[in-house]
Image (tube, rainbow, N blue to C red; front, side):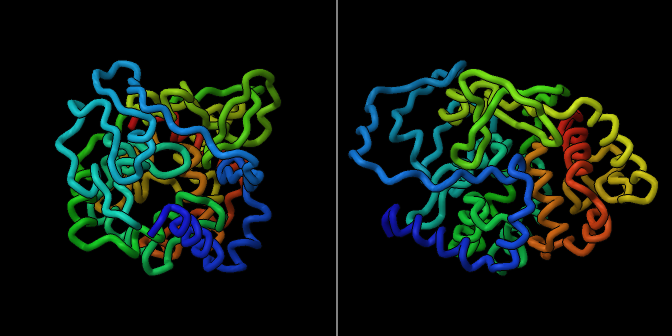
Length: 325
């Protein structure tokens, strides 16, 4: 299977997600589901990638641009930071099983367009892959590329590959990766590769959204696992979010600690939610609310999210993202 045929398969998956998801997508907040408009047709052949070695800040390793973009072999800038990667984490299996560590990074912290899975319970990770494969979990935005990729991978991965990968990520420690800052204005952004990217100049009102961007875009594109993100949140959102998370907001929702643990770092097979990406958590809440997620523990989340507005989602995820993991 060629890269072109893989892209066609991903497109087919987004179509098969159904018209109901497409209808929901009309009202989805773009800050949580950053999907770029289709790229214009190329009028010239793309430039050949440089063969010169590149280095990420603070690393003694070097990789070429081609190696950095290889979906089946992970650029591991800091191998001393983590245990030896399980083979499916560091090396995928062409044509359909990408290396898990390429998107989620060797430290499991991920990026805003996918998921932070470091420290999640092994059985929880395994169940999510099974839910992607069965159709019980998909995205409320059918054009979200990370979800389409996961559906394809989940159908191609073997039980053994799933088990060793889930075991690896479950043993990693979630560390502080996102800096939450309250503000009234934010840098202007555009969408690239499923992420918000800051413009070279200009600001705009933040409105009711969380704007999650790279601390250093060049390092992010090198997949430097030491270069994190900043999440701008509206002034006052952390206080509002704290009230919703800790008390349920006078019946609007439930106190998150009832299931996720009083420290919000997980309990049993329930995942920890403290210190994770606001973009990722917002998609989770909205996917539960719209019915896009009906898999494991989906029914448990139906009532807590039923009355949440998008403003509530902003406040809750900003507050959770600001916590120490």
